[in-house]
Length: 510
Ligand SMILES: [Zn+2]
Image 1 (tube, rainbow, N blue to C red):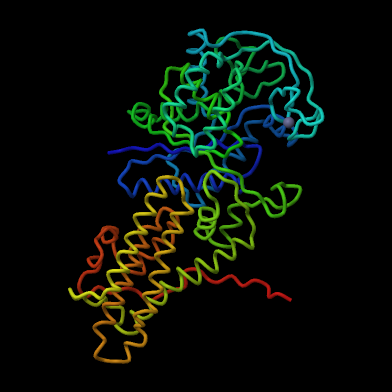
Image 2: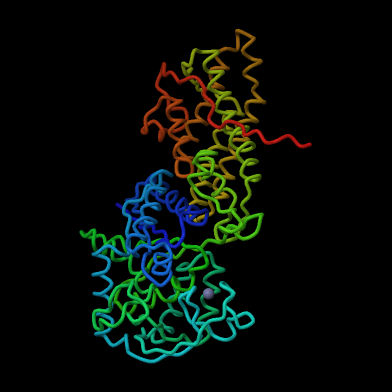
């Protein structure tokens, strides 16, 4: 069986789950469902990143211990994904004992091989960012993120010989052009690699930070957050055992937002090279969600919380919006107005109405019993079937290429064709002529085939809706895969309609 390993970043426990986390996680879940349906053994990993200055400081401000603080936020991530119906296979925490052991094992291995050395470094350091800045990276002498002046610090630390792997990394990016995708991010990484790569400082003295994994070869130091966090993708598989590391790891599809491109596209592959591990298959990078009200922040009170969205609009509607509105790789804009517009237009008026209408006619004219198809199809019957088949094929290709918005566009194009078919054939008029009842039965049969196809193709994107459609049709999973015209046994009865997506009333314009 073919395998695929899909990962989200480990979310840093300095913030509670918001829109950005949710988008990456929903994409990961969509891919997992998509590959499962294709017969892959698909494995989804998510979790939380818990060490470092920021967490130690946040815990102190909270009057609690770092571990207790991390426990609370980590549990919040896990329960949020559970409530959102995210089908993760393993949830890793960087405070898990097996992870700490694995990080130490790899550090020891790289140290032993001579790729970690002790040296001194001085520079301008932003505590908020947990990193050194060069003069030209600062804005008016201040950290561009925190608007505070960094402090000059100098200390002895351990360094990873990242520079040694620069040429090897450039070569990999050239011979494997889809290692980092979409292309714009690969270009960005290659541009960065035109400058000499500096070695990576991978430690903090325990005099300054205790909340981290101790270096196995020097107890006066803990390791730097990235060296700790990035290894999770491998430590989880090592921990779960079996042949996961050898068979699943080479199929890795990382999903990240562009803010962590550099650690994932530069630090991580060079670390893997030094550790003697194969590289991931793809690093898939998406853009930012911008708010129409400015940058999402707690102080502006415009932070989008997934469970609040679920409670107000339904998880599937929220998923649909996220996947339909953002072109993977590019930035997108979030507004409640746009969300409501999509729900009303695409889900309530189009998808929901179409399904209700078909099932209502089936109920009214034939008491729900699916009528037989003759061998003598009309031209529009073939056209409908071919349109739906084409959309199914297109949606599959687009999903594989991470173009979820285009996959959904293709499915909604098929819906438009189905609505056109209803207008063309006008079963509600034909039924008045008793000679045409058999033809009405055929037309509705074809329309039920559209609904049956939707129950299959929508499943990765809108899993609950797909189940609802299947239940309305009263069919099994196996029947979902049957060819057009063979999905319903003779005398099969479908259920009466129900409202799938209530229209959201907005305040009338004054
Ligand atoms: Zn900063």
